[in-house]
Amino acid sequence: MNETNTEPRVKIVSIDESSEGQRVDNFLLKTMKGVPKSRIYRCIRKGEVRVNGKRVKADSRLTLEDQVRIPPIRMSSDVPAVASQGVLQRLSDAILFENERLIVLNKPSGIAVHGGSGISIGVIEGMRQLRPTERFLELVHRLDRDTSGCLMISKKSSYLKGLQKLLHNKDELEKHYLCVVHGRWPARKQHVNLPLSKNVLASGERISRVQADGKASLTEFEVLEQSQHLSLVAARPITGRTHQIRVHCTATGYPIVGDTKYGDEDADRQRGMGGRRLMLHASRLVIPAIDKFDRVVVEAPLDKQFKEAIKLLNTDS
Image: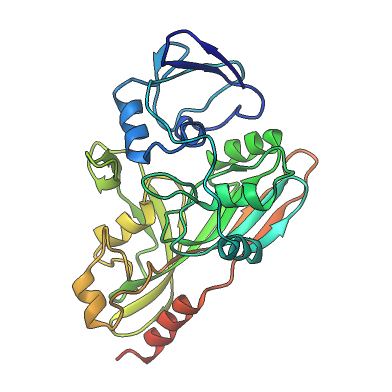
């Protein structure tokens, strides 16, 4: 990236091939080291960040030679935070699939995909330390911090662009999830089609709500196992809204176990699930062939806590 100073404390950054195709927020999180994520999102909302002189949204994509205005904010030292050997080993052990273009991890619950808002090290920062010779490593998509499972990291800018195009067509790139929910999910309820609106709180926290004027949001569900009070459900989001599966489950009356943002903590305690992780797992990923590259199918094993929740479901009465 080539930088040109146009004001004493404002940076204008020209986007090169290594950053082409990235979301604005991901680019800023990497560039504005040490700045809390909430502050970065506030800068975007207030128009302090501009691309080619225009206001942008957090999920806008950058193109080659875009000129990004980075506001005058005090940043931490250019020396990046260093992941512990324990974290690096967890990430190494979590690799499910790798070739010359792509890494797919079984992201552990509790690890953020990137740093920010008091989190110095996320998956992507750790992977860059784990693979210092890789010239390009970028997140293809996100998983919530407490969600586990398949997470894609691209090793090539051109492949990242192809994957991002596929993400806009959910019939091609398939992301499958498993979740344990409260209640007996009705077998007939195979689709939840409720519009969602994303809101950002003053703290920078992102939440979604069902709203009539929200964006169209569709999730497919299938009951796999049930007890009197709990259900194991497969979910496939056809659209890709923030917290879509979590909000759709709660809105239909079947909140996900361990969901401290949208769930039912009283029900968690009653079912002996209090204090457990969010029971949402990205279990399977199907990437169709892209140009000359073959189709990829990856499945992510469940962790110990998720298996224990299923065992509890089987003994629930």
